[in-house]
Image 1 (cartoon, helix red, strand yellow):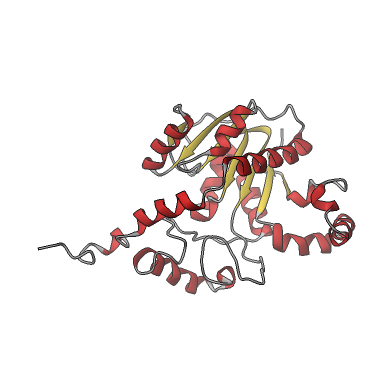
Image 2 (image 1 turned 180 degrees about the vertical axis):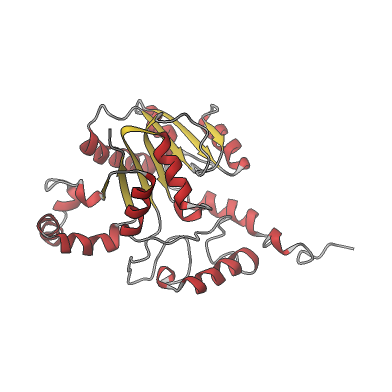
Length: 275
């Protein structure tokens, strides 16, 4: 008699979730060239903030099973390592890199010495952790004085005409009340795993720019920046259109316009640790 896939403890989640996640991940992962270009572009912005020679040791938190950022940064001369909470991903990541550069661990408990990292990359992870507060405290602890942490996460204020909002396949999900979001998380894990694109740990925290700054200050970071603060008038991203050039000038002149822009791009925050 075959086993009924539904006859299992509810806490085990949907029986298809893990398999479908791995299939979806392999199809959706960016090409190495695209990811390398993105990472090096971000590093260029960070050099404008703290100087080109300030960043040597880099930690990638929640690096996943194919940590192209680690490979890219090591090829560029940075001493880079990763931490990943899912054991099977750690094994896949080290196989991908060809060296044991990724260790198992959580953002709330980083097994590295104090002040040992000049840069911590924490991209698309904060929304998944158990405790954002404890995670940022640990990141502050391992960041060297004068170093920075890059936090890229969810944006509760972002508006797209298409309703896109990250991993959830539900239009305008980021605007839903917290209680409704909790119900969607339950349905994703136990009933309809496609809702959050088969994520094993769907996003459960949604932030605004000001909330991220508050969390960062509570952890100990002193100053906060967005990418709009690091672009220059000559950058292709600004020169692309007249509208962008005008927006850039207004953002530089008016705190109110900058605040309006941060409702859309404030999910990428650079946190600076005072020397």
